[in-house]
Image (cartoon, rainbow, N blue to C red; front, top):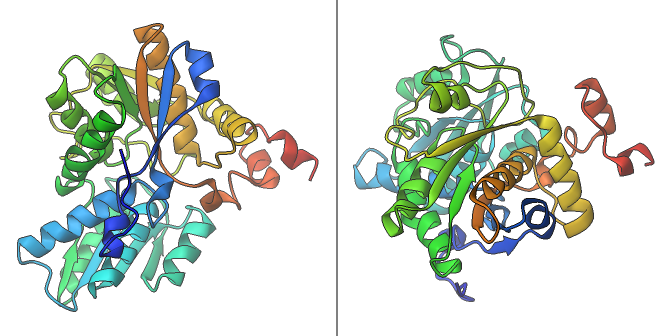
Amino acid sequence: MTRPSTLSSSLDLIGNTRLVLLRGPSEAAGCEIWGKCEFENPGASVKDRAALWIVRDAEARGELKPGGTIVEGTAGNTGIGIALVANALGYKSLIVMPDNQSKEKMDTLRALGAELVTVPPTKFADCNHFVHTSRRLAEEMDGAVWANQFDNVANRRAHLESTAPEIWEQLEGRIDGFTCAVGTGGTLAGTGMGLKEFDDKITIALTDPYGAALYNYYAHGELKAEGSSVAEGIGQGRITANLEGAPIDTQFRISDEEGLEWVARLLREEGLCLGLSSGINVAGAIALGEQLGKGSRIATILCDTGFRYLSSLYSAEWLEAKKLPVFDWLRSS
C-alpha cells in the first residue's frame, strides 16, 4: 500500500500504517510474521483509530455539538487518541484513568490539554471503576458525550473499515491468520470480521494475557481468570459489545515473561521499541504460525511505542519490583 505523501487534514494521518516483516519471530515460527506498525499513528498507538471513529459517530448521531466535551475511561492510549482528535476538531476532552498506569501516559494527556482524572484500580463490578466513573462524569456535564469504547461498536467498525482492508491489501490477499490481545475487543473483532469478509478461511485467534478471562471463555465456555499480568490496556473479564459475534477460531494464553522476551528481542535485534502488549501479540502470532504450519502468513498488531513505558517496562527497578526479568542492557546501565 502506498501511503499518501500529502494530506489535507491531520486526522488523515490516522491509519494507513505500514506492515513490517519481523525476522526473529518469523524464524521462530517457521513462517512469515508481519507486524502492523500502529505506533505510526499521531497518538503513537492503535487506539487512534477507535478514537476517530467514535468521535465521528457521535457527530453523525448529533450527540456531539460544537464546543462539546468527550469523556472517556481508559488505560491511557484511547484517551491520548481522543485528546488529539478533540483538539483537531475543536472539542474538549476529559479522561479518567486508573492511577497504576504509566506516568508517561498521564504526562502525555496533560501535555495534550486533556483534563485528567485518576482513580484507584478496582474490579469492573465496583461502581468506582474508571469506566463507571467516566460515564457518571459525562452524565453530570453539559455538552458532554461518553465515548464508551468498550461497548461502543464504532470502535470495532474502525478496524473493520480500515485495519482489515489495509492488511488485506498490504499482503496482496495472501494471509492465513491474524491475532492480537483484547482490551475492549474492538481491534480483534473488527479486524477479524473484516478479514473474514475477504476470505472466511483466514484463522482469527485471541491472544490473551494471564489475569484475563477470555482464553478460558473461548476454550471452555467459562469466563475464568487465572494468574496476573502487568500489561496495560489488554486483559478483559467480560464479553463487551465489541466482542459479541467476534469470529474467533482459536486462542492462546501468553505470559508476561514470554511477551517481555519478544519485547527485548525486537528492540535488540530489529530496532523496534514496543510496549508489552505488542510483545504478547507477537508471541501469540508465533504460536498461531506454528499451528498453521510452514509457509503460512500471520499478521498481528504492534500496539504502541515503548517510549510510553520508560518508567515501568524499561526500568530495571520497576521490573525487579514486579519480579520480572530485567533486560540485560538495563542491568549494566
